[in-house]
Length: 173
Ligand code: MN
Image (cartoon, rainbow, N blue to C red; front, side, top):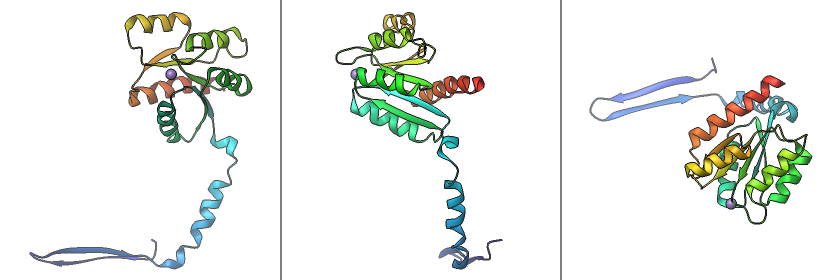
């Protein structure tokens, strides 16, 4: 179908060579195809936005990598609580990931600010923390976190939770 050939040379006891040959003339068609894909406006490609508030660069880097594989998610990051609240106010993300242990305002205090804002209080907020004790998880649920993820992140659980909460958001649209 591509105008090329597939061939094989085999010698008993010595080995085999398999190869394909494709004419290079068809290559100029490729840039056009790629250009038409890129021409789709960005707002159609990005369907969801997630804000991650986290002071630890290693954790930020990991989540940037994980969400980089989800092309429909735009990730906003904040390395301080104050910046995180400012981004939540200005961008109204679909989901917020919030580190509990932050210098200055901690995650509970940030959550309190978010829940006190009528335009932000319905955004699901996931606590992300190394405090994996049952008591801590209960405190998190009581405080109003939608879910509680412990570090180190369980990647399968992370994706599943994200998909679940964001698909809930899609049905509203
Ligand atoms: Mn932290």
